[in-house]
Every structure is written in C-alpha cells, then in structure tokens.
Length: 352
Length: 109
Image 1 (cartoon, rainbow over the protein chains, first blue to last red):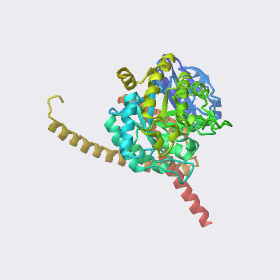
Image 2: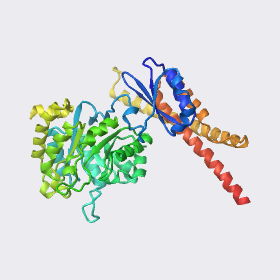
Image 3: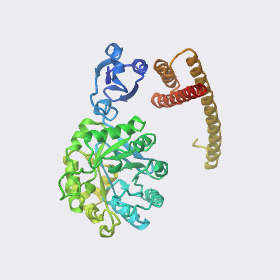
Image 4: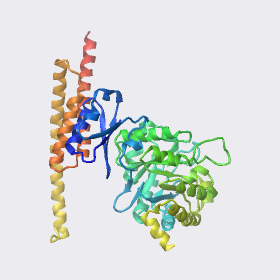
C-alpha cells in the first residue's frame, strides 16, 4: 500500500499517518520528491484494513501495490533513485541523466595488468573500475581469482586513478573484507537468489550491483533487490547480463526488453553487461548500443590488456583499443537517447 | 578556524576524538540502561498477561523520537532507523527471557 500525501502536508501530519500505520505492526518508508511525498507501507497489508487511511489529515490518495516487491517498486518512490558510489576522492553515480560506464578485467591477474587496464579505460571515458578478486567459476579447477591480494591491488589502483571500484562478493563472510577495499559490492548472477547473502548486504553501507540470474525472471530479480532493501540498504543497481535461452550462437541472450520493463516497474537504476550477455568480444559494441537505446543507465564492460592471454573470459574481453573505439561510437547513441556521458567520460571524449 | 595552524588543528582533532570516545561510552551505558528497563517491562508484561509485541507502543515511541530529533535539528529518518534497531534489540531480549522461562518451566514438569 502507498499513501500519497497532499502537496502542503506538514511534518506532524506525516508523523501521525506513519504512527497509525506502525501501530498495527507494519513499517513505513518515506520518499520525498520535489512535487509529492509518498509513504510506503511494508508488511502484512491485511493489517491495514481496519485503518481509515483515506480520512487521515494530509492524505491525498491510498493505492494498493499489487506487486510482491514494495521498496523496489516504482510506486514506492517519489522519484527515480540515483545511487552514488565512492567518496570524494573517487566517485560515480547511476540513475541520473548521465550514463556511467564501468570497465576492467574479468579477474585481477597481477598489478601490472590492472594498472594498465585502469589507465586505458579511464582515458577512454570509463568512470569506474571493475575487477574480480574471488571468481565463481563453473569448474572448480578453473582459476579462482587472487582473493585478498586482488582486493589490495584494486584499492591501490583506485587511489592512483581516482576510479571507484566494484568487485564481486560471493560469500557473506567476505563482506567486511571486501567493503573495506571496494566502493560497490557486486552480487553475481549465480548468487542472485542467495538470500542469506542478500540479507547481509542489506546491513552494509555500500551500494550493491545486483546481476540478474541466468534463469531468473524480472520479478525474481526485483524480489532479490527487495531482500537487500528490506534489510536496510536502498542503494541497489540492477544489472541485466543476458539470460539462458535455447539459442547457442551466443553465450546468453541479452534481454533488451528487460531494461524498459525494469525501469517501468522499479525506481532503481538499470545497467547492462554486454560482455557476459554475448560472450563474444565482437558482440559487445552492438549490445552496448542497443542497451543505451533501450534506456539503460550504464554499462559494465570487460576489458583486458591482452584478451588472448586472459586467465578468464578472454573471448568476451575487449582490448583497450577496441574499448576506446566503443566509447567513441557510444557517444552518438547516448545523445540520441537524450542522455549525457558522466562527467569524467565527457572530459575524456573531449580530449580524444 | 582560519587563524589556527595545522598543529593547532591536529591538537583540537585529538581532543574532539577523546570527547567522542567519552560520548560513545555514555551512549552504550545509556543503551544498557534502556535495555535493562526493556527487560523489566517484558517481565511486567508477562505478569500482567500482555504480549511482548506491542506495536501501538512501538509506534508511539518512534513518533516521539522523530519529533525530538526534529526539535534538536537532527535528520529524523536516520534517527527513526536507529530507534527501530533499539526496539528490535529490546524485543529480542524480552523474547529470549520469556523462552528461557518457558524452557525452564517445561524441564521442571
């Protein structure tokens, strides 16, 4: 249930409405926009049946939210959410007018390759660095990542380049360690429904990049976001990364329609991972263009200084020159979509 | 502040941090006092035959702290979150005390 308040509602009226809702055992969430304020009710909605919500002072309308996700739903927020990442020294934002591009290697292999990649992607216009430390691989015999050594390298390169860092967390036990080094915590596709991990991430004060599971529906993705939000962390960025279909020519099938659907259903920012979606370097650019055209708020792209020698995901990684070309071509799509490139990206494009 | 030297600033920073440490200790001992009282109210509710969960009372507590926070110029939403956490702690302690008693009771039977 959401309650939309009158334009001139007072703080005391809002307090009273919330007290009435909370006194039946529900919780409330306040979203103040420029033009309206929304009070979202969370909990068992049958408890509200007895309450004369419409007649409380300050209430304009009462609307049921029929979706199973509440905090993540578009109705719950007066305005679209902008998720801010990092601090003063290194920052990025998702969900505003600007498109934010995250780039970097699938996994951190050594210091030299990380520095090389970070400098190259920054020059090309990326405003955030990705890099895997703990890699969940399909085979237990495949390279599993450098672990805490990779986290230290990421933190070092972050301070050298000013690029905030996102890295994947696979296990609730790693959260504190990773949050110490990274600006944003990624939940990989294979962990999208790891509910104990999601609940723990709800208690962290770090934005979460939530990737859609290989076989997850849009509703399931939003319910996963709801888990994080219900536990207190509202800074969630959704990521479409391709789903499993009967098609074998591509690694996954990029669900382009998911982008406008997610943006219609939710106030959370949506970004796309064209590298995993196609599984092939040659598909990254066209899928990136399609994503921006469909309304994505950003991209996360795998870049490796020498894709042929990459320890993981070499086939889908772009070489720095190919990434630079992608970023240059992307500009026209960004403009056509009525968006801008995020601050640092624009400077880089101006230089290029 | 503009007149002070970096050395002065560092000295004052250290003093501020000392004071913060003292305040943190005070907050924790106040929290301990509040939780002790919460446990006591739990015992009293049991004797009076009332349930532990009292949403009306919780909502009134939250509304009161929201108003107080606003009066002293603090952002009310984070203060509400802090107090929901405190209420949650208090509820857990009351529930633990009640289940200890139930378990003890069943053993003696």
